[in-house]
Image (cartoon, rainbow, N blue to C red; front, side, top):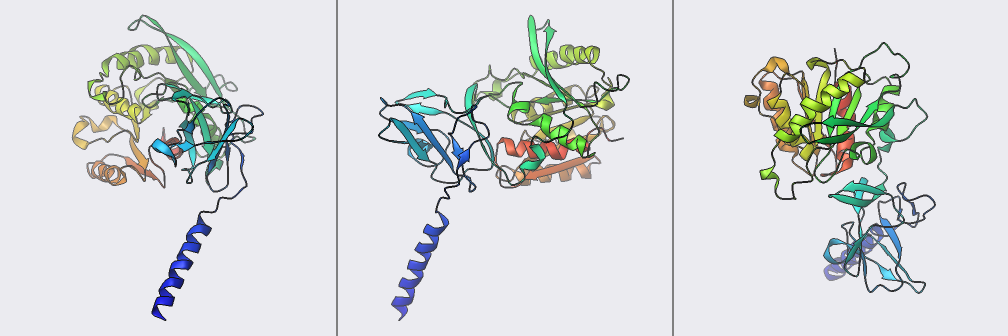
Length: 369
């Protein structure tokens, strides 16, 4: 009887395991597909499915990270010359970069839109998040994201930035706005926060819900891609600091209706952009009053020489990163008398859903009277 019971438990456990891993066939095209393209697809569980035309290929692998050889998803060739496959497991919610390896050559998926990351244009896929409403495109007044070219004597060229202005900016010509300088991560550029991060949509929605005071956001290239991965110890902040503080900020203040003073200027960044934020805010305490590190390091109370210059310190990360270090750092800052806030994004790692959620939490805290 005991042996029968053990066997029954084993069979039931095996059945439950199979039942739990059954893939739902409710696949739909990713929201980041090229116009009219059916693949890649995602389903309600978070699986991703790919279909690539390569009739002469010997192997096709998707580098999305789950299942198959070398951390990728191995596709299987069908009779019509298409290669097809589904991730072995569910993906984290949110945005992911990926590419296709065909017989050893790296290519982008022709069915997907491209996003600049990993120092190259990569394919992108969106796994719908349960809380995606806060960055969804809605029928609300929309701000404007415009490209600017500003002169940079220190680099002997014109440099590019993107500027978000809130919906009210062009309506009331007498009103000025605070400014957040928002930096991307390593291997990305000034397009990241609006393309991958949906920061303009998050702003539009928060403003429409009267949850934040409208402000301008400036996003520029952080001079990070010249440093190879693993070589960040050799990174020097001074060249970018000069571009940001001595060239970009004066240009923005001259060409946009900004409230051009320390109290109404913030700096934030994700990952390496957080490292840049940490260094520059400490080096230039008279320039910025609000600091935010999104998966981008920590502040220690002893690093900040003049507490009166700092109105807010915000530090965040994903729950799969270093939440204890983030929370403990903020406790230390609070004990030292700083207005410090921590945020941990649940069930995410070093990825854009962490940073989208972090920005949603940060924005209402900025520029409060």
